Length: 79
Image (cartoon, rainbow, N blue to C red; front, side, top):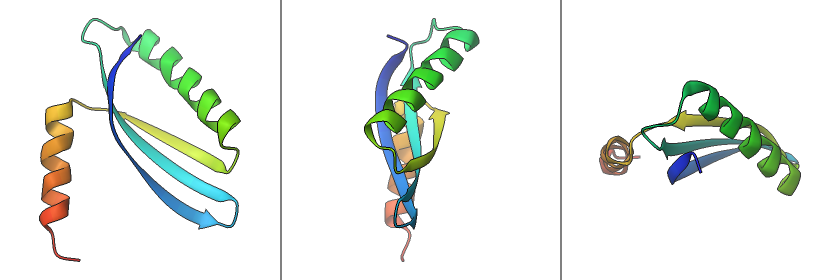
């Protein structure tokens, strides 16, 4: 598999049946850009098939360590 791990997902409800999802995922180091593109297409198809309310899926290739630091910084920010 091209994905080493899924770091996390953020969703936004745009309407009664419309969800936007953003996924952070770490890819294996030896995966080519074309393999990542193919993986993203497979993920989009699988997510939209299982959850037709997802109208857009954004996938960000990101190392887990970077995601963890950014997530911690967001959690520390007052609402």
